[in-house]
Amino acid sequence: MAELRRTTWCGEVKQELVGTQVCVAGWVDRRRDHGNVVFINLRDRTGNVQLVFDPGFDASVMSTAQDLRLEYVVAAKGTLVNRAPEAVNDKIPTGHFEIKISQVVLYAKSEALPFQLEAAEKVTEELRLKYRYLDLRRVAMHRMMKLRHELVFSIRDYMNNLNFYEIETPNLSKSTPEGARDFLVPSRMNKGTFYALPQSPQIYKQLLMVGGMERYFQIARCFRDEDLRSNRQPEFTQLDIEMSFINEEDVYDVCEGLMQRLWKQFLNIDLPRPFRRYSFDEMFCRFGSDKPDMRFGLEINDVTPVFAPIQIGFLQEILVASGKVGALCVKNKIFSRSELDHWVDRVTKEFKSKGLIYVRFNEDKTPTGPLAKQLPATFFEDMKKQIPDLTEKDTLFIVASDFDDAWDILGKLRIELGKTLQLIDKNRYEMFWVTEFPMFEWNKEEQRWDAKHHPFTSPNAGWRDLPLKEVKARAYDLVCNGEELGGGSIRIHDAQTQAAVFELLGLSPEETKQKFGFLLEAQQFGYPPEGGIAFGVDRLVMILGGTESIRDVIAFPKTQKGSCLMMETPSEVDQKQLRELGIKVL
Ligand code: ASP
Image (tube, rainbow, N blue to C red; front, side, top):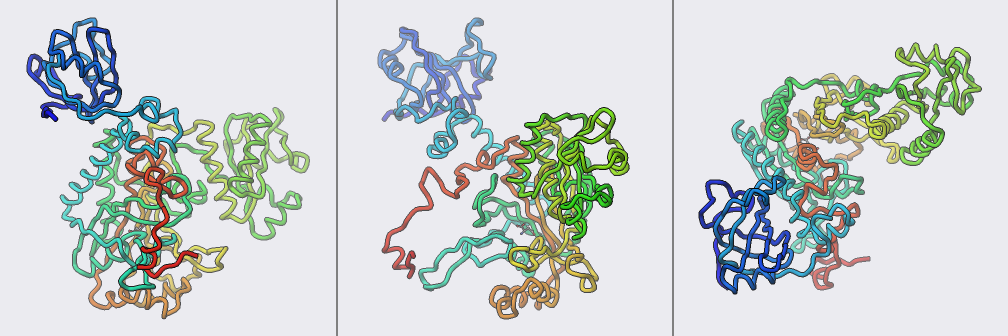
């Protein structure tokens, strides 16, 4: 096959090149055959340019041009010229130019695509994922991949400037307790034993600090075998960071500088520093979440005192059991009956609430709604003491339960109301730290304490004197627009505290030794005070790229069921392979 060498990208032809010979290569994006003249729009990674084939030239060039169909792969050479004024297309950056082709090479033909690239938004995502390599040809996907590349490149540059080393850690590893299930890999050479794919490089990075590396980062792949709620992937990418001889302020400093740089570079937004800081308790009380979206208000009001004296059986039961009543006050909004039914339905089914009470007011401020008859005449005034800006034009949504559950449900309802009522300003970025997390979290199903962050997180000084539910951790999350961008902690520094925490989490000394003996041992050999953080790279790209789906920012993502529709993974393997591994499928 004859060869033509590309001299310029399609999207980058420019005035200086007019009158010269240029050679472009790419895919046929569009064709118009005007009988004697053929126009081809050729596409490469950078954009589109118009090629003109007219019969004044070589007959073989013309016959190739006539054969060209969509997505054929060609290289073409000719003179770059300015289009006639009436033919200028202002919609594309190269719309002032065209190339009069004198030579063309057809590298490959293409079958008709299973879907039209420009109509990709209209086909099912399954079809796009099955033919992901075609889906990737779309401009939107190119934009995301480019953004992702530039983001990672920028992060590396920033970290390098701050004297961090990029160090790779193994993927064939041992279980790390980040709270999810491990993916296991059977060992052939040591039958009956398994590696775990790392849920994060957590333990390695702590050991790197023992190794005196001082400042580490990695763009690390992490694996968590979770049921994939929306926007989760079984493997995802973290910017993982660890530093020695530091405290929280140093971590905040590095991270705020990085976020400032990325927001400036990709959105041209100046994030003011220092970032605000809030305690976990404050966030949960106000928003029912540890990662609240602060682009809108609709905060949760504690209205327990209003209901305490009212004799409504089920509410009294909840209050007697130290429960709480919380309310969202939707300003100036009269919902229709069917809208209210819709919210009751969602809150009970989706958020697993036992119920949702709504209250509206008549013009004379008397309450209406299912419970209205049982509410006292003073209800509006009583409420106004808790919600000072309450008016009779507002609607209240009320949930009663134990505090954690009620506030969690109201927090979720708040977000959904915010979206539906369009209270969220999409052009705003509300970034802040959440600190003073609880160290432990009661696991109702398993009836035991779990680590809220992970078991290597240092509790605050004096923790031994407190009941476990009051112990706070030296942990911090960076939150933006309702998403956790990153989270980390100052680590436990001594083997005794580490062993005590493992024990409280229900690990026996034998289990601890088997799982983390090497860490406890390492802590005896001169372990520096240290801490770190990890950011979700996929999430960062999503926010900076303005997309809501994690699958848009990953070249080859998995579906909600954890499968790759293109390669059809996971898939069965040969009996021979299983025999070699000493494994039998039940
Ligand atoms: N390993 C933690 C995580 O993946 C982050 C950290 O504590 O640095 O969430």
